[in-house]
Image (cartoon, rainbow, N blue to C red; front, side):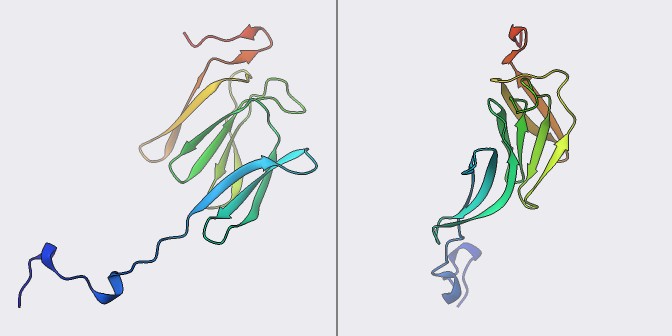
Length: 138
């Protein structure tokens, strides 16, 4: 008996595939409210565990790049009203890396990050506020 490639009967071990566990990264304020934490939450087990802590940064912009990174851009910290810092959370490694800072600080802005050529990250930052007031992207 001969079958075409798309007509092959399913193999016994492929009939009932187990779904891959779904994990979520949850960002939130810790109980002391001085810092934020990142938890990895397993949907099937209904459990989460601490991945890392992060700096509390209000009014920052966050941008995910695929499944590999999350960027935290600008915002307001305890030390800076208009933060220039750009931080990248490397999901697989579970750690933060500081990237080149913004030319000038801002908060309540929009940002987008794209990977070019699979390596370089291109960052676009739009609008927001600084010490002078409302910023325009035009």
